Amino acid sequence: MTPSPAEAPADPADLIITGCTVLVHDEQERIGFEENAAIVVRGGVVEAVTTADAVRDRPAVERLDASGQVALPGLVNCHTHAPMVALRGVAEDLPTEEWFNDVVWPVESNLTEKDVELGARLACAEMIRGGVTCFADHYFSMDAVAAVVEQCGIRAHLGEAYFSSQGPQGRQKSLEFALRHRGGAGGRITTALAPHAPYTVDDTDLAATAELARDHGLPVHLHASENRDQAETSLARHGVTPIEVLKRTGILDVDVLIAHGTGILDRDLPVLEQASGHTAVATAPRGYLKFAWPTTTPVRALHDIGIPVGLATDGAASNNSLDVWESMALTALIQKSTTSDPRWLTSRQALHHATLQSARAVGLGDMAGSIAPGRRADIILVDLTGPHTQPVHDLAATLVHSARSSDVSTTIVDGRVLMRDRELLTIDVPAVVRELGERMPALLDRSHGRRIQEYDT
Image 1 (cartoon, rainbow, N blue to C red):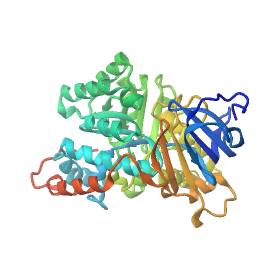
Image 2: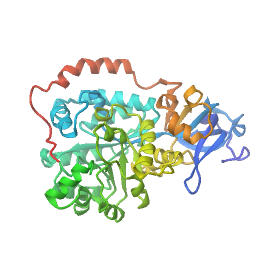
Image 3: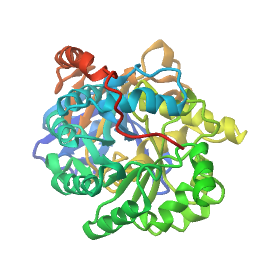
Image 4: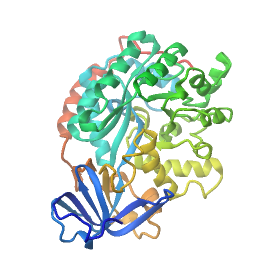
């Protein structure tokens, strides 16, 4: 912990959090916990992680007594479609093809910018209440999402999605959005180019996207090898897997975040390992179970070749929630089952995925994902006094397998408190729910017979 009381500056800090147990990473990135600790924040950055005694008399603009609570780096939702909370529960118990073609894509053809704004506002409220301080979003009308991020104080990695069926203007719109909002919201917004997937974006568009990414220093965020059917269909039709498509079109030569990857095959692993860009995968296990996909993201195989895997929820239309705590627990449990090894994933490994690995997946590994001097002050406080988390014999296991998103008491982004004692401070949820409800009949109307795309894999 640093600094000592003698080294600490005398001028007031912006925020001091005292009396908590802090999750820390050592030089080998192993998870540890410092008890009776304090976190000093100045200018939106962690200035020090020290002892509670060291800051007892230190002046601060704001102090939070976190006695009995655990301070964690804010969670990162590495892949979602935030506005789709408006479609939570409208397409249930369906196989993937019917889910897209019969319900979701017809409904999405009705979307207005106002629908997207309200959905994003409700989603941000849900994520802030669940301890998510940053989310990676891949959707339409993303100017509206960026405005919500600006207003509510959360951090976000945003991309305007496009299909080849939109023509060149879809790709151009994605680029213009990324350039317009890069560094927005006081640096809380980062951006990406966002082609939908290899099965909806052709090789020409993917190659052009890779070139734009290189020219403008932008990453790419897309779906690829979402499930085994997509991989097998791609092999049958084109002789290559979706991952190999990313290789031949140059996408793996730039920084890329791949959503899902449950269809990643053994032949894809050396392709990913040899990628010259920074490559990461986001896993959202609840949706895979719900769609009855036969495989899950091969987290262990990706770990073995040095590919970071971040935790995600996907959109609430398929996952029904934006709960990264649930994703963390499910990832750990499913990995034990699929590898037939109870030693993998351990609770400490799961916490590493939820914090530092997730930050790396969205390109923020140098500024977020851990509570340490120089990192952005994206911090959550977790109350473990409930009966479902007591007694605590192994703190890591309690956090992963017993704690819930509702145990998050306080959420802080860039040193600003967005939720205190479970009270949201930046979003009026009842007003959002009321206005969104009024728009539902028009949004859900499918009588027009349109759809924005065809799912055929």
